[in-house]
Image (cartoon, rainbow, N blue to C red; front, side, top):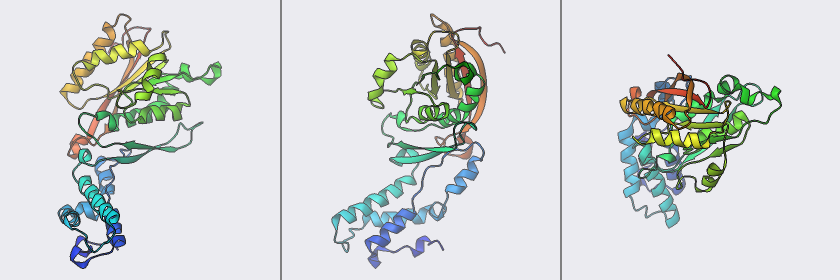
Length: 315
């Protein structure tokens, strides 16, 4: 039977290190992994525990641990461990930005043929300043799960083993935590180059510069007015010449700003010296934990596939 906050060992009782450590571990709140088969409300309900249902009481208890000198525990390292753990439990109740470093497990169903179901374990460092590349964004998971279908449809000629050609090299722009690129390597069973800003992945910059790729991936890559043109230019520079090369881009349509950025990006792709044409587009349903309420967690993700050949998509 789970303990209620009233049953937690109080500081005046001088509980042992082991007892306090066990209580603090039991209060851990992990961020959810979005699953397109479940409603966001259902997933959040699964994440809830006694601690989330009685947040005020639990927060007061955590504060009592942090404020206590823990003088009856004669090992300073153990005192520090308890203070740090209580502080972490407190930050977990203040939203993702305050949560510090977290590790998430992202389940995949495989491709149904050569790849069995698997999980990717992705570490997200603490979000500080403008280091948004340290967060795993929901659209990356949406596109990751869609990769097997892309290989069987839009990118079929690149992955058709009957043609006797090796699988294409893949470059991901703005890899962030690497979920999308690592998933592509596993699901497509091919070599994937990850790239991002120097402070995110410094050791991969040279690889990104030196390789031309038949497939370029990007998920949630724009959040400023100059990004559409920069992204179009980066894709053009790194996408291999030839009619079979493809750029796969996903943009979550959170608000009017992201819709405007998307339209600017489409135009920027057409304005390139060698235009990249939108071959097909669709929308996929996704979820993210950037919003504060249930409605804000729902997001429609635009998916576009571009090529160097053909003609612009007409609707």
